[in-house]
Image (cartoon, rainbow, N blue to C red):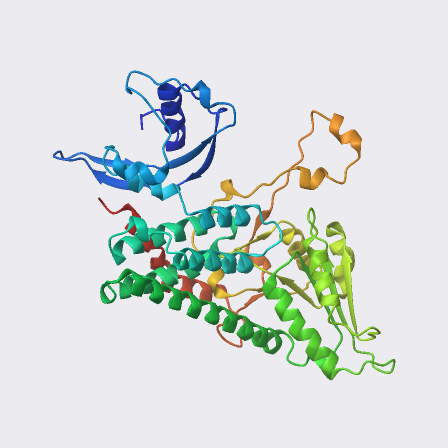
Length: 447
């Protein structure tokens, strides 16, 4: 990099244009990778290499013209790179970003998935991880279990980084798996044995994940609704959280079982769900919950409302529930679907409690508000009239996540115990866990 470069990517684009004449409009960035630290041969210089993978846009291949630094160029199969003389560690840098086909397709699926919650994305990530190992995708390029460890650590890093705003659960699971892999590394020199150990660790992680969900369901009842069958309840929530879906499913089943479904019973359970524009995940949650109700239910009702009408329904609400895509370990702030803050503010205005229902694997470190996920404006404008197409001076914004400050949160429902978690509990747990993330630094160790 040079002194006036704003980023490694900017320098990469400049170098590509200088050496091939391809401009940034001729190529498309597929992904960037974790940097490598390389000591130059016979000298004391240390290089930090930032790998990027680009695709040449269709029709631009013939535009390539190499500069004085090169004699010729040709297209080769990636598997043939080993037979060429290259700059030191080019192959290692290449495989930081050129990933097995199943991983590439899995990352594309995770990146474009707009309906799954963070927990579901984490489950997808583990499936991709396991499939990569089962396929023995890296055996051809590896000489030892240690080589496999670094390859799998790199895959884990990409699985975590593909959706930064929703990565907390994926990050915790991958970190936990790789920490255990590192411990058994010296005990299993055989690559096949190492693979079997890693697959066993992934399987055990999935079991623990399922057990955590069951524990949250119990805490949800004991902490928030210890005598739920003695009173009418009005719960309001939004978007689609698999954790909240599971907890509400458990509550509805218990309510139907314990509260008489007849006209003489005055106790009712009302669940109000914000539709959660633009993709209406809240409506999907409502549909799933409605399938639990008997054909004629007098005691349980489910309603979907527009996002902006939450204040209108708030006076009769007893509990406000929110999921979490990330809980910031240093102060308990929650990163969640856009619309969470207005719902919590309406609750505060009416004096209603707000509870975050989340597993503790969502507790993570720093959050960059500048890198919040913004998606295709067409998701918002799809329902507008054709006249919108003629509006050239209006920009439609589609922000997906926002930060909910801890001052708007009454308590956190987690799998850890039967009582509500506090900000201090979150800080304590984060301080115990935050060193786990250092394992990705192994990828930057000097070569």
